[in-house]
Length: 373
Image (cartoon, rainbow, N blue to C red; front, top):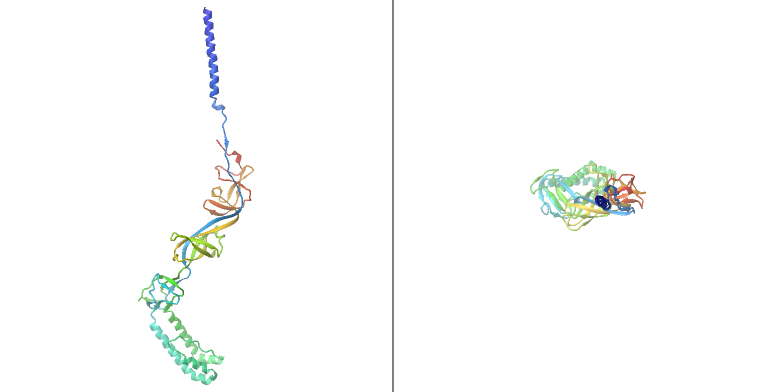
């Protein structure tokens, strides 16, 4: 009986051990050791862009203020009391060509001119009998000149001398000296009355009626209406694509729509302060005003070029290309920038580029190594 009980106990212990081994095997299959698990890696999907060169258009934007195309500053060349012309000389006043803008009191100087003309007529009258005697064949023209002489009118040109002897005869009697002295006075008399050289508007008035005007004093400014010139600054890179006599579109926050202008001049010099080139655009529109700020927009085309994202550029003139599954750093020429795009030349058709700049890229890098967990 004792032996049977011991044998039964051994059987139960063996069953328990076998059950433990089986259970451990099952649990081991359900929970494999983490160290034996191999990492799972997945390749990054690289988006590739293929270069296809062609004409690339991009806008050039330039800004500046407009000035009247025909604009004059007026300074007094004589002194006297200021008087208005046909209408008050005030900012905004419109005058047509030939109308007097302003008048400076000239009564004293005018009387001096009249006195000199009278003196000249007296001189001609005194010389005329001698001319009749010494130059009878030329006396008729001098008689007609004396008969038609009017002190209130400007001097008419003197009769042409037929010979040097006649010319010298008149010069010896002070005829020419007196004549040109009066002509000079008449030119000065004309400066007392300033007329409009073209249809336009007074843009600045610095005098009031009754004020004493002094020689050299600034009187005001006068500008032609409707025609303006816009001076803008263009980047050196963009200026090479601008051509004279080509149209541009002008816009402003001060009016709706746009205005058409024409590039008339491009300065050959570069501003040392701003490193820009001055471009002059002619424009005519009734909505414009002297001094208004405008933005010029011009679409230009670059032949045999390609547009890429600016983020692809390295050191502003290099980018990575894909060659034999490796990234290779290539130099390119950047022609222009357009917002987030760069227009480049220098890459042949078919060149493959990454669509975006990946972190950690370097020259000669194996593209296949770009994997992420």
